[in-house]
Length: 571
Image (tube, rainbow, N blue to C red):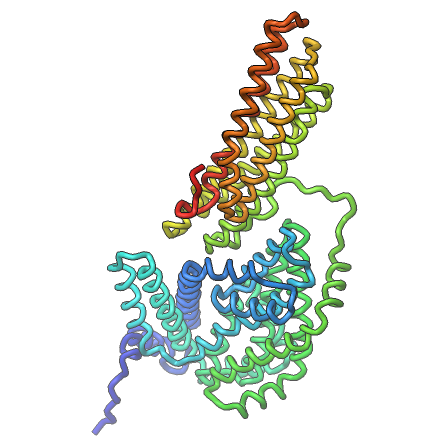
């Protein structure tokens, strides 16, 4: 009487097709390498796709909270460390956390030394992924995929759709790991593969393989996931698995260095700090793998859990050591990446593609870029009146040339917001995106008024030798001062979502109108006076008044869209 095979569990039944194929591929002890590789890569693809869907959903849910958390961050190294851990645990990307930190450094919110604890904490935050995927829940993976799809498909509210995507992402992560495990299972009996895995116990070889694989796939979570699968199948010794996972820390640093090419100096410093921190920690632990293996074995748990625990322990230990030396460490990085003398940067400074998958954070960076654009516009506006009334051609040409950078920044912001709009946005984020786009358009219009209209008036004044009286100068100066002040307040409203500043711009309307009427009345009186070139002078002066008034109206529109509709004053 033949031996009866016990019934398959739910998860095993779901993977029966793949297992039959693999069984056929290994008949007679031979392994169909192509089929194993295809199944492994397919499982890896599902794993990474599921992780991507999960993290994207988490970022959409927690984007505003992350923004507030980072905005409240202080110079206290331990609060910075906790922030780095918390933010990265949610978004599961130390590179995105680093990008956020670079923005705060560039914006003058924190120093480079203050940012280091956040970068260190990001390494601990990424260990959450390893702890999650070490759970053996492959049997319910497809059930999670089905439930998640159903929730996201039938939900009417955005929040429910996002929650469905989170559940589906978790299911895909575990199903991908199950497929990778199925692909690896036939290799347990292959002596050649067993010998290869045994060689991974050589610390430096395991370190190198883990680093190279992570650099190629650009995801340390993928390396960690495969190692956990191998350990769970009993295919790889614990020491070899630890060497590979430690090597993954170096590989992810290499990815950060590649991403920093062509970026601002602050971004390069952050990437170098991340690299030095990870490489130094890895080189220390690679010679302590035996002790680390003994420690996690004594803690207990499945082989997969032991790998995840080791991943957490060495990242926490590295941070505990380095956190006390952030000052010297910052000085070392600043020496390695010094500020070149006389460097002058044009173009966008804050827009970063790494944040496009987190729209709320991408919109925050757009606000910083708008401030950059506004500062250039404000420089033009501040200097234009003196140039128009008294400057020579060179003065006017210099101001006119400033508009080239404003146009460049306007194009960069518009393109960036266009890419933000390709992602799923909440109603509030959509409103914010449209408001930022309108603010950028208004700033560009102000630049055009200065470049084209006011510069041309200045050139006309030189050609016709028009002389402006002291009384007219005083009135034009008052109107110009109010316009500059309005733009400063409007940009404060935009970058800080400051409703009070927006309200101040609105309240300036009556004052601006009063000064305008006084200036026009004065010009009318001079028109009938016996003054030289009175008609040309009248046209020149009234045109200056008219263009300054147009600038003020563009500033009002910026203030009007600066804050969410519910908080807006009547601008």
